[in-house]
Length: 246
Image 1 (spheres, rainbow, N blue to C red):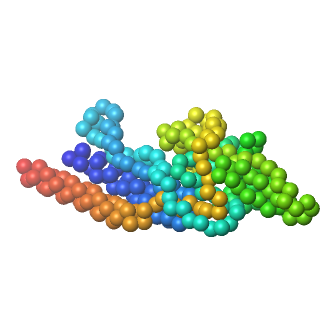
Image 2 (tube, rainbow, N blue to C red):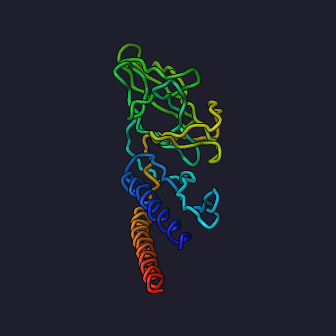
Image 3 (cartoon, rainbow, N blue to C red):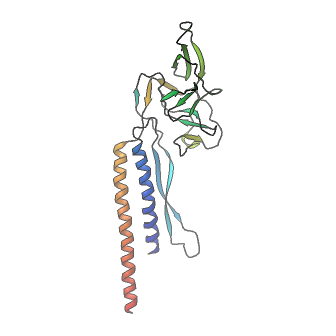
């Protein structure tokens, strides 16, 4: 009886947590460069005297789905999409290094190249500064060239190169801000094999149909866990009636 109660109780609780993960993925189905979060259940035995028959159900985040999303052309010079595997290196608010697939870039009022969320895009020597009154282009290898709007015509200047990395899925971890970081805490090594597509954006890799099906499945499994708890309560009540009759 106690096994049923522990398993059903923790199963119901973590089904709600898993439902929240699926709902979060579904809410970001249209977010540029979003990677779907993956989760799974696992059984954990309860440690303690007299508790050997009990087990908890735990919902654990196993990582993110790094499958590339669909790429759409926008024609905007500041939009970039990674073709295949790889990440764009950005600077976090605390000065650390993180990685994203969101390539909808912008130039801040201070002339710094950054993401839509305000993270500075990193180059070989740190954040990349864009000269004022200039038109920029981003090459496939991340090299940024600018042409001044005034002055000498066609005076092309290279102002930096976007740091592109390609760590394996086992080397990175998603943070609460949606950015990925190296598990080791060290900056990732630049990878020359990562290729950009200028004037394009990569969409989210969330499969809306699969997410909706998962929502329905989780809801039904939650109902099943609650029915198991109700059955356990009814069995306990019948057992008490039998014992009282004796």
